[in-house]
Every structure is written in structure tokens, then in C-alpha cells.
Length: 96
Image 1 (cartoon, helix red, strand yellow):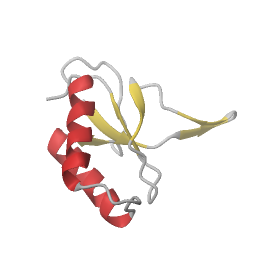
Image 2 (spheres, helix red, strand yellow):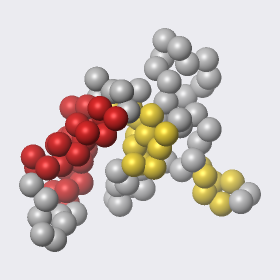
Image 3 (cartoon, one colour):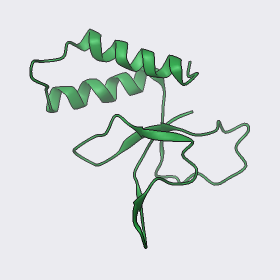
């Protein structure tokens, strides 16, 4: 399952929550959120905070296109390239 989450603060500083299996991707500079994966609901035996946003391939593309619109790269990255990057990431993480 693709998720959008934020780092947690602990005595040693910022850390990735234990329920994130693979994270730190696609940082959003506006709200400091990141993208990662966790177990799907049907096999997850642990609590996932309500503040965690579940994403699909389509909503991840929307997120990334929105970030690119607000923070364009130089030279500009075409939308098709961003969508291809998301597709490649989803494919490599076994996400439909």
C-alpha cells in the first residue's frame, strides 16, 4: 500500500515511523510529507495512524504533478516524465 506520511520526532531527532516498510520518497517541501509503503489492510496487524494518507498510483501522480506545478525544476520537467517516474516507482514497489 502506498502511503503519504511524516517523520516522527524522538529523543534522538527525526525518524521514520516503524510502520513504514520502505519510505523517504517524493518529499513535499510544503508540508514535509514523504511517500512510502506499508502492509495492506488485509494483512496488517498493527495500528496505522488516521493521519496517514493512502495513495493510489493515480493519486500519487496527481500529488507529484501538483508539487511540480508549485516547485518547477530548471529546466522544467514535463508532466509525462513525472508520470513515468511515478509508474516506474510503483512498478518497482509492486503497486498496482
